[in-house]
Length: 315
Image 1: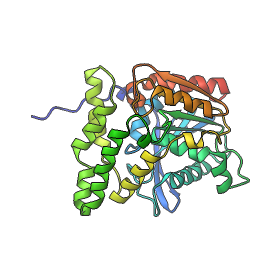
Image 2: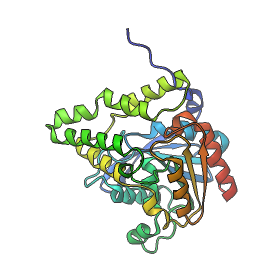
Image 3: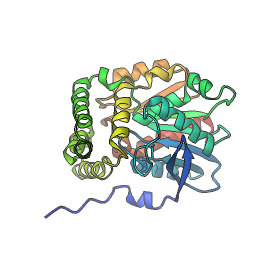
Image 4: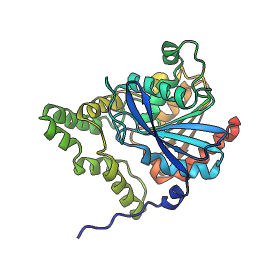
């Protein structure tokens, strides 16, 4: 008999958080967005999830953050090609996602006073979107898109060149195989539960057995929610070849980096080196956690973000 799914340890807090769903026409496609917090909020954050995720993955952080800062409104989209958002008409690489993110910011926070947050691959997209060079190329007279940047589990160097390059390379071979197979077979391989479980086991760090099981179940629910094989393979390639490092020096807004001390995708040394590339940044490393701070320690992350907003006079 199959075991009943575990309830989220954050279910009550998330259920008590006001949320409204809507759609936006961006970059020739439709983006589904969830807005958490009061309609009359005086401050605004836009948060971008990671590769193979969707808005659900950021809900624990958002719910904890709104408990800390009830006057904040947080917009969380499903990135194009993931969750409820269909794929973009063109390619799904970092420049395309960054252009989409800039258009999103101008749509939901046109005054440029919001905070942009990104987790994992979302940190790469957010950093690229906020890079002075890319903003100038997109709209030379537009000014700042956001007044602060928060990067959760930022990717400090391309995963194909980092400490986990062997496992990343093996995953890349599997994705290449999925791309070479007939589309139905290749898509089924990319959605296979075993692939999801291997990735989940590799990232989880908590010794709490119930929390580990819930994280694996959560990945099982949403990890396969991509739009098409093409969009998934393109975004996967972007996720293993891109990093925050290439954009950091061109970011001229105050930045918070929140990482885990046991993140194989971002060893502490690489995270320290990344910090030094920014003009104005502070860093927090959460002890004992890896790449899943949004699931394992969302309250800690939210407190660090709230403290950063306090320091900068936001919310």
